[in-house]
Amino acid sequence: MKRLVVTADDFGLSREVNEAVEQAHRDGILTAASLMVSAPGAADAVARARRTPSLRVGLHLVLVEAWPTLPPAELPDLTDAQGLMRRDMERLGLDLALKARARRQLAAEIRAQFEAFRATGLPLDHVNAHKHFHIHPLIAGMVLRVGRDYGMRALRVPREPRDLLRRAEPGFQAKPALDTAPWAALLAVRARQAGLLIPTRTLGLAWSGAMTPERVTALLRHLPDGLTELYTHPATAGGFPGEAPGYQYAAERDALIAPQAREAAEQSGAILGGFSDFLP
Image 1 (cartoon, helix red, strand yellow):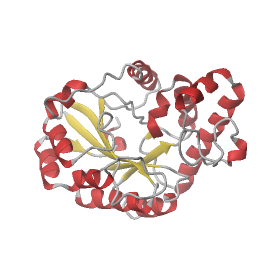
Image 2 (cartoon, one colour):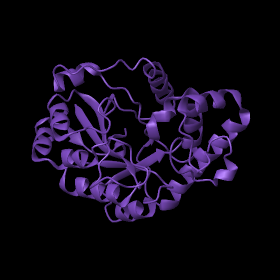
Image 3 (tube, helix red, strand yellow):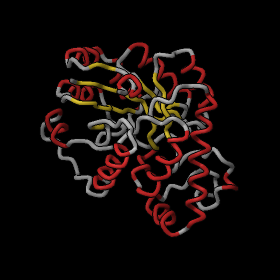
C-alpha cells in the first residue's frame, strides 16, 4: 500500500509562506505543514490552520538559525548576538556533548516549543526539526523524552533513497549522505522503540529548495509502497526575513498545485493524508 504525506516546512516563517501553504492545500496536493511556533508569521499561520482543519499541522522545532521561544538571555550557550539560535551546527553539537548547561538550556527550549504548540489548540500531527537537527543523538533523546509528555506520535526520519532520485531524474549524481545516514538510522530505531510512526522514506533532502514541478511529478510517478513523506518549502514569493539563499520558493509552491503533480499523485494510487491519518 502506498501512503503519502506531503508537507510544507517553515509554516509561520512569513505571510508569503503561509499563503502558499493555504493555497497548496486548497488547490493542490499538500496535506500537512510544520509550524515554527516563534517565527514572525506564526500567529497568522495558526489562524489559517484553525480555519482549515483538514490541514494537518505538526511542530517544526527550531534549534538552529531562527527564533527561539524562550528569551535569548535564558539561552546564552544556544543563541547569537542577534538573539537567534546559533548557525554553527557542528560546534553547537560539540558544545551539547561537552556542556551540561547547554544541554539543560536546549531541553528547556524544546519543552517551551512543545508548550507553545499546545497553546495553539491545534492537534499535533507530527514533529520534525529545522535543518533536521533532531538526528543529533543528544537532541533526539531530548525530543523523544519531552515529546512523550505532549502526545507526540509521529516523527520525521530524514532518509532519502538515492536510487529513487536517479529514477526520477536519470543522470542525477547525489553526494552520499555518509555524515547523517548513520544518525538517521539510529533515530529510526529509537523512534520505533518509542512507538512512534515514522516514514519509510523522506523525499526532499537532496533537492531541498529546488523541488520543482518536474521533480515532484517525477518522484510521484515512481512512488514506492510504504509511507512516504515528501517535504517542500513553498512560498508565494521570496524576500522575507529568514529565507534560505537560493531557495526556489515559488517553484516549490507551483510544484504542489501543478496539474501534472496532482495527476501523478492520483495515478500513483497513494492514499494522501497527514501522519495522524495513518496511525494504527
